Length: 172
Image (cartoon, rainbow, N blue to C red; front, side):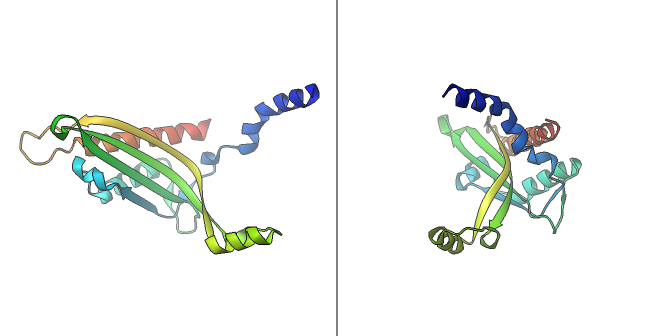
């Protein structure tokens, strides 16, 4: 039993080396999708194109470009909701993930039950890397009137934080 424990403890430091860091291998992506939660409209977060363009620009700065031959897809998820007295504050959460789809024809198994389930599902999403950030902003009304854009700025800052984390992970 002691030998097994010693063996397992000696292999623990090697585990990350086997897994590797997939961010170092990413050099492009095939499409970027944005999903905004229904409640996010309460924070005036409605224009997905603004965030799509912003993230695409940030990824381009890192050398990641849209490539139709890539199997990697980037997903940006944004959620937000108001809270507090008169809903004067907005909490936002932003998540960026790099995903691929493993198709059923790429999975080999002799187990007939597993094969039937795999064929029925067709494909499996695999998340290669994901990171998120959240924050709280007061929804103060601009002096010129109109809707507060504080939550837009918060989401852009969160995208900046996530992209910085991605860049850091490429050197780790």
